[in-house]
Length: 395
Image (cartoon, rainbow, N blue to C red; front, side, top):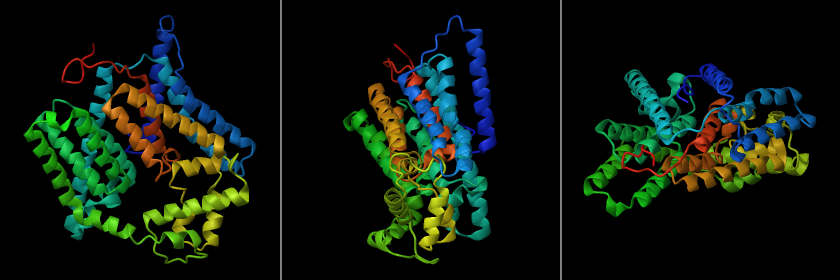
């Protein structure tokens, strides 16, 4: 998990090492270990098997084969988790703690890089959005998603040392600077859920004031750029996006408008290509998307865009069956999260379900690894009653 922001090779190697050690554990303890495939862990395997079946009707066999290679993690990681014991609540918190400290190091790196760029350019924009994480050539949305998981972990701690409080504010500032509107919305929802869960009246005035100050500091630091991003979105002409015949190379696009236009294209594909039941085939929608963008004369960079919507992406390429399996996975995830009563599990579920509306998360290696690993981890944690305020001891 902590290698996801470095690059694709390190995280892939780490997955290989994890699988190797899990197999080693299983063979050394096979007399004591009983393999049990939880229903939740079978679901991503089922999804991958269905992905394999799209070879039979794929319109782009070469891309579909690439998809098979990339998506194998959906089967490999759940199988691996079935070979090892369930994770104790204490060890689960240790995983999140190490992950959070790793993210803090990345956050410091991003801020230092931004300070260096600011000295050179005198532009405040280097502290925001994609510019802030440009040193590692990252997408701000995925970094925000990863940092949010650490933020919610720190927020859930009942006893916070000063360093953890500083880290909490640090991640809050980073998340707002990264300016992902949808995740900031989830952040606000998460804070409300936290206050409701902890009951506002049970918090002392000092904690309430500290929380309010942290929010004010974060918003103040990034208010100019965050306001600018929301202001830009107000220029989205929804009716025009849905009806305009041609756009030209200099049409003014916003994040909302390009995502809406991709849904318009999906509607046309369903009507004209009859993909509702089977789809184009895994990873096989690219050529049709590119053809339609050229037809509408959009900016050339958009020709290689995916749908920026996981639900639309999987419907286009695997049809209604693939979409239904994904929805069952997410439904099972949120059901288990609510049953666990674990704040981090609940917020992870909400984050994933929400971000799927604006990003094709599983079609990017970083998003695929993050989702699959945490999905399996959460389903294998022994969520038992906590006996003290430290949030780590088991009954």
